[in-house]
Amino acid sequence: MEEKKSIQNQSDKNNRIAVILINFGGPDNLSSVKRFLYNLFSDPTVLNLPFAFLYRKPLAWLISTLRNKASQEMYKKIGSISPLIPITYLQAEKLQNLFTKSGFPLDVFIGFRYCIPFIQDVLTQIASQKYERLIILPLYPQYSYTTTGSVELVVDNWLKKNNDMKIHFIKNWHTDNDYIESYVQLINSSLANMDLRSTEIIFSAHSIPVFNIENGDPYEKHITETTNLIIERLQWKKKWHIAYQSKIGPVKWLEPGTDKVIEQIAQRNKKTNILIIPISFTCEHVETIFEIGMLYKEIANKLGIKRFARVPALNTDKYLIQALYNQVVNCLEENKVKIKELFSDKVMSS
Image (cartoon, rainbow, N blue to C red):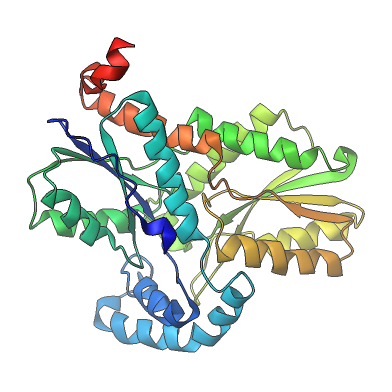
């Protein structure tokens, strides 16, 4: 694929630093849907059930087999590929360009949790290139055991056999000023085309099992903190909601469901406009394009909602890229790396 070309600056500086952007991953064609699902449900943080280690692999095979056809149909409707893959490459490219423009000798890599290039393989690649320092930046702003925690598990397992680099792990960045601004700008752009007198906002986040929250997962708290900051900066005084989507399996998940909130709004007033913001998604993928943009839109239309719209995922928004840049620089400063000494001679002399 064209987007998989090398994006690294490949600095010849002695003090070389690598940054790996980590994302969920997805199928790159319809034939890889089942394999992607199997990788997903093989993750112990996803099927975190009592004694699951005894049956996780067979259960992952069963679920991926049963869900394969329906999942393929969903992906067909959004182009037969997860858009998360090419968008993540574009995000990395824009971040690399920002580092290069600033004169930082930092090289950006990409690792996916459930498809190639897998995180552990990219870590090995980075280690083989003799980088002295590595910054791991998951593209999950809010921390959850099921996302960032899963990445930590992979990294910890890799480190048991490799420990030659200084590794820094950015665990959450859900209150970053530019990250918040990216949403504010996109929301304001959408609201400009809506009747504000009868509009309600729904922040839709990917749900996680409630038992994770009961065991100390800060995800729900982080989602609330992000949305409160956005609402405050928007100066939004009308109704708004936090809801959750994409539940799977028989366990209890965070609620209310996004579809249920849409139904509740329609019961109060069918003439209401609804604007949905995919709050926990930094890239478009099946949950945003198909689930929000198609399924929830169909529900809203059937219920007689006056107008249904969604804010796009952040994708390559300039404020998001700046937020990623901020996190890397802050991480270096917190670890007492002398930032000025990293600048290229060309930038320092300009």
